[in-house]
Amino acid sequence: MKDFFNQYKFMGDYLIGSTFAITLYTYLNQIRDQFDLIIPIPIDKSTWLTRGFNQVVGLAPKFDWNDILVSNRSDNQKHQYQNSRIERIARNNPFQVCEESRNKLREKSVLLVDDIYTTGTTLRHARDALHKYGTKRIESITLCR
Image (cartoon, rainbow, N blue to C red; front, side, top):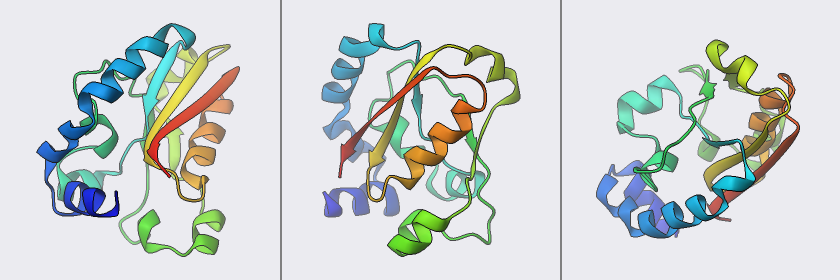
């Protein structure tokens, strides 16, 4: 998986993401009725400009994602993978809910989808951003740990 993600995310091999596309797409559609919203973890603008794609969305590109969160990581902040475990856990929350989506969250059940679970900090930050707007239940899945 380490080699897969290195090639996929850092070498920009978008097509290799299709390795999991059918499986993830099928699974998300099977559990879709259990959630009001299925939200991919977003990437920041700098990563978008460098990579050209959101790695979570690229794992199931035909899925109808709910883009509710944005990442406001500043260009001078390190990426998660560049931080030690302690730095990851102590990091400030880079996520916020899109202004136009805030009223869609009250009393909703949400599934967060990420590619890799390392310390859980990314998912906790996303959860915290969603809780501010009254989300009643938040669960998550990741491709690997």
